[in-house]
Image 1 (cartoon, rainbow, N blue to C red):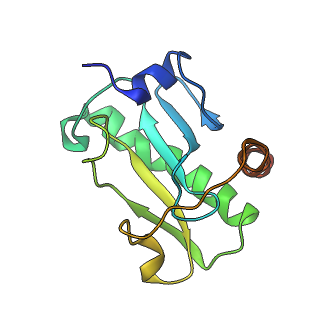
Image 2: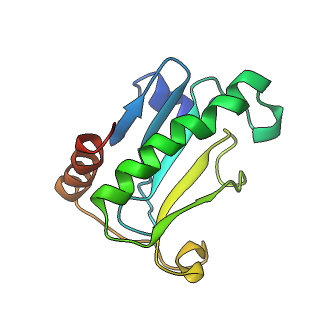
Length: 131
């Protein structure tokens, strides 16, 4: 079954893209816990992260690391939290979340709302800080 993330990869659904290569795509979460909350996905749909092929599993964190550093340069925070939950969308993904304390990664909290222009500005700021 095709997911919203697969549709984003194919360009059938829009996203606020911050980075992409042959195997991975990173874009802003549209229901963020924090400004700059970014999702990193493998382009090939696989539901469970531990079902990813070893080379893709091994590559997702180095790809995410570069984005995390760019988020840190773009958003005032103590660090970038990382989590894999895998229940919301059946397509493996990593959450990169700017945090100042542990409760900033509480997914039961209300999500932030941004305008399209604010999302574009956040994405552009992260893109500018990519190495």
